Length: 186
Ligand SMILES: O=P(O)(O)OC[C@H]1O[C@H](OP(=O)(O)OP(=O)(O)O)[C@H](O)[C@@H]1O
Ligand code: HPA
Image 1 (cartoon, helix red, strand yellow):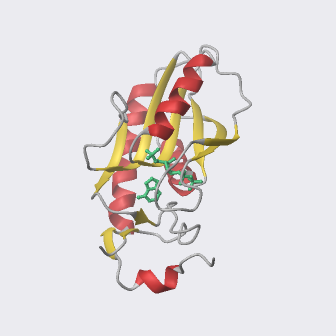
Image 2 (cartoon, rainbow, N blue to C red):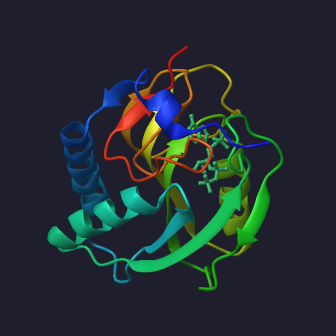
């Protein structure tokens, strides 16, 4: 079966946060992250969660660099939506190669929705010996279905309890490079 087409839903979708709002939110996050890590001897291990986290992570990394905070890059790919608009079991497609023992790890992702992804990934980092795991997400979805105890240390914006896409997030693997966050029409 062919996947639904972005072009067929984009016209009826709502812009929830435009590019300027997201850039401002990322700058605010960068201020807070800079302040929390600036005195460390070693840069944090900045782990981008692919694919959705990529555009946000790139922009956040530049904002941190601009503020004088160096970060060490790695990435992982864990997916539980796999191009669909509802989640299932988490599949690991790539794990970070950098040793985490004793490191402060900053996980960077596009969205905290039900929290299953960040719970599993955070636990894995702790099992690898990370001294601390913090989470930066561009968006948090507002509902009461989030896994207990999962939260982000740094949050850009809130989004409503609707399927959202753009700014890294996909609609059936389309639309990740839209420079705004949209919500599907209900
Ligand atoms: O809080 P949760 O309900 O677990 O959902 C959040 C996760 O879902 C999305 O990833 P997805 O599985 O779509 O993979 P992708 O980034 O490759 O699209 C998103 O990038 C988060 O990692
Ligand atoms: O609403 C969403 N949109 C895109 N990806 C997601 N992953 C979890 N929730 C979402």
